[in-house]
Amino acid sequence: MSNAPKAGIVVVGSLNADLTIYTDRLPQPGETVHGNGFAVNPGGKSANQAVAASKLGGQVSLIGAVGNDPNGNMLLDSTASAGVDVSRVRHSDTATGVAVISVDAGGENSIIISAGANGTLRPSDVEAAAFADAAVVCLCLEVGIDTVIAAAQAGHDAGATVLLNLSPYAEVPGELAGLSDVLLVNAHEASLFLGAEADIPDPSAEPEAWEPVREQFAHRGLQRVLVTLGSQGSVVLDSLAQAGDRITRISPTRVSAVDTTGAGDAFTGAVAARLAAGDSLADAAAFASVAAALAATKKGTQAAYASLEDVEAARAS
View 1: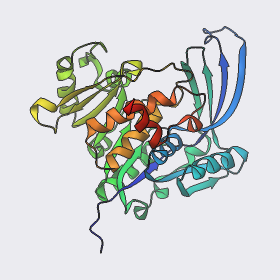
View 2: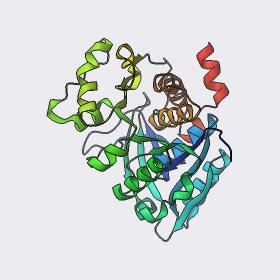
View 3: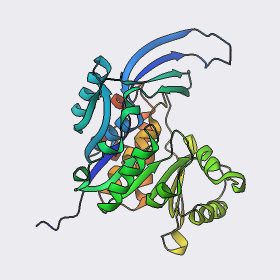
């Protein structure tokens, strides 16, 4: 029997066809604006995260569901061509999930998702055997919460690090929080999770300003938290680290953004890849900051994701 450490990454969740229209600015409620481009691309938070992690050297398998339709075939082709094992993505009689996305001239976006086949993913689709070699299990909330809990439990039982991306935001049952080793949220999601007691610091604040937030998360049983701050970088709140290393501010990587759609997924996939490779949480976040920034310099999601060589070159420059 091999004593080599586990290195696999299992991503459980969503695959969507992204229907993206580009426009100078996003419309206000009730307003119609002109678009200047349209594309149908492979997406879905989990598929994106799987592709990002695979392109960055991870050994990735994906558990999900697509419809028996052209969009489902597109998604399977895209993830498989990136090196992801899609043997546990099943076909459903329900149409493949879709996301309708608007992107403005500054790269900012608004997104509406329709679950489609993602909504048919059940706890019974999560088989323990799929997690045997998992070092990291990557989860989001674009599929049913019972399925997410089942995947978190399977990852926990396998001894993997369970990475929960709390997006799209929903209330987290105590059972899921207890099974999550690393929580990844943006500042808005962090505020929603912590509720009225939360006082999320300004992105320009000094690291020590995050100490009350770290304590609040720890009180909720979440000892290791990554808070992304968009163009302002991120902050690592690690209550399991030594006293002087519990808060780490990750500086942003400055780029000219073209399309920020999926940049958060690139960040999540990169964190998963580096944790599976043995990096510390802070080192994984620093690496992921560069990967996410590079993703925002191109249109689309999966096709825009950087390779390991791209990220290493950017970090060296």
